[in-house]
Image (tube, rainbow, N blue to C red; front, top):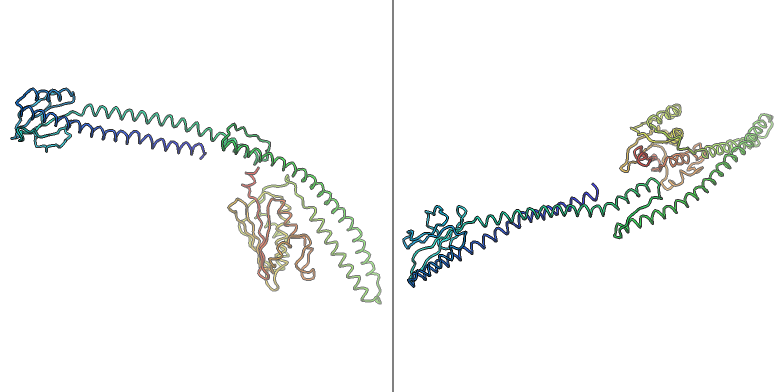
Length: 470
């Protein structure tokens, strides 16, 4: 839900509350007030007429009575006047609207009753310091109801005006707020795609305008930083290419004299007679082993320097299928060691097939090689999707493990935790694994303890993450 829509809904709810108050509560309050005022008016009228009748009777002056009655008759809403004697019998009536006069005359004095659209009140009439009887006045409510209806119609109209004007203002304000934010969103999206030259056109000078200005300054700094990074990256790439070329050249150049050393040592051994000193033979064997080990190191270095996959060679890969191929290639090694490889549900990733296959081959081979004595290797490979969308692959074994303090060392080239007499190898396998994983925008780490096995944890971006980035 957009900010503009949220703002509009909040304003609409507020306007609806105000309009409901204007339409319902205000007319109701006005109605109660008007009825109260009318009741006071009718009561005052009845008391004034009763007083005039009583005074006129005391003075035996009928003009006073007529004046009191004529004063009341001038009110067009007067429905009738009934004068009752002390026996509650009708003494006189005034019925200009020809209404059906009430037959029930037992109202309490001073009580106001609403009946048949009339307000009816009964007040006492005093004569010669005694009660002459009672005066009943009926007063129509037609004018009051018309006034209340008109007031309610006005309230309804005012409510509609408030809603209409408020909706218009809310749309205007929301657009004033959300239009710059939409521009910021678009530019931020372009920046996320790598376009740092996008421009924001915000003409306001409020907080949103300041935000746009700050964002524009941030893009400028990113552009400058990216230019620096590109320049340094180009220089670094050039140096790296030179280093790779040197490494390959040196590896090839070193291999030729090594081959000659090995060849000549072999010839010398073959040409030695039986009287040759055993000590000299031992020296020759040592030279031969050292030469072979050096050749292995050069081959490993050459293999490590060649790991440089082009993005064009990346495809969607089924890890389940690749692990199956690796275990098939290592079938003899697995059978001889008595290893058991359990593979769980592995996902698909986007990567280079050769590199990913090399990664799993190195890790599974290590789990077999570094097994505990008299314990068959048990290797478990599983995968799952994390909350951030990345994939986590775990390769767990029950081998000799490692001391966690050497975690930063095991992924470095030519770094070994054991001597070559204990375990063969050149210390390049895990370095190759790390280089392969990094070229796939992933990460690799490990957990372990001595004699309790090791677990290698690899994270790769999922296909969904890669598709969103691209």
